[in-house]
Amino acid sequence: MKAQHAALCVEEAEVTVKELRAALERAGITLPPLRIDPASLAREAPCPRAERGGCSIEAATRLAAARR
Image (cartoon, rainbow, N blue to C red; front, side, top):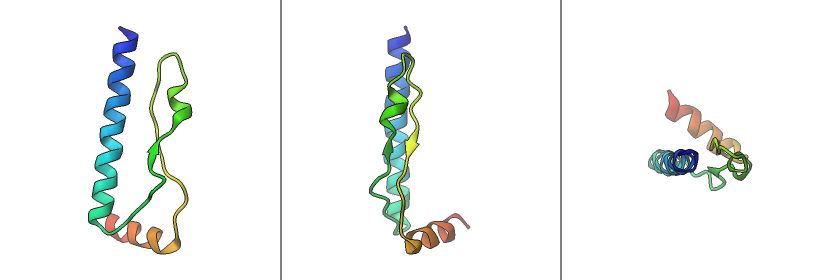
């Protein structure tokens, strides 16, 4: 049962990251390092986390504007 739950969590996280990436792209914002944090999957019961790397000030400004 744990393995099935873990697989579902990872699948949901992957879908969420994909949707977030698409929403950001529609707003003209690209964050290539947006991904699932591999360390968050290295547990007996994985708890996936989205990880995003640094971005330019321009991208940060656009992200802030999109959020408003």
